[in-house]
Image (cartoon, rainbow, N blue to C red; front, side, top):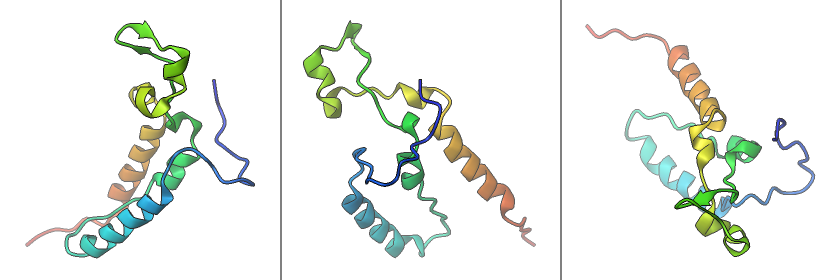
Length: 109
């Protein structure tokens, strides 16, 4: 039932992204992406600010409601139903589409 993004940025977000790992991945990509014509759009920060981007533990597993102990263990029991509903992935698609249509057309002779 959330309708607004996270707007209180006075404290660091504790959503689960390992920013050290993110930085390491960016470093590896920076070394190799210049070898092939690939464009990298980092949507991690954007995703962090979307409340609908984060999994929840209010779900069924194999047809049964999660126990309170299971709900307390989101690394194991969090669902990802939000990927099946309108939300953050649609925002990613808008970025990809905008990038594609903003590139000049090239013709090969």
